[in-house]
Length: 166
Image (cartoon, rainbow, N blue to C red):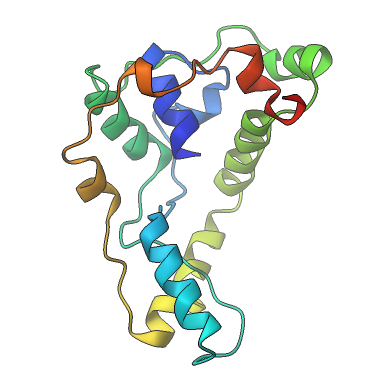
């Protein structure tokens, strides 16, 4: 999700307006891969049994995430535009099939309509159960990052849209 949003921030546009809208309310908790690896290592040691939610230390709306990514891409916060064509997801679906970013858009829409799910992040949290804490926050990871197009595939490239066909 973060990779796709970073691509959108770099080029200043997003094919799905609900991913860049200014009034997003659901709070995500992005987690760094180092923290996922640490939790998996602990889980494999068998110290705790059950089903857990794995989340980062910060809770951010999509707009907050986009603001950070836009700033790191050298753009002003709130500058990434969504599609001005109604029903663009249906057009994309017709021409290229269902894609990862379309599923991301639908997931974001689902979460915006089910805000109560954000509270479940802490009720079954791996971190609250084990006492471990995430080591890398979203803000600290991007503190020294600079997003450039050379490091990301353009989000409208056919190879990106149909990655499962490559």
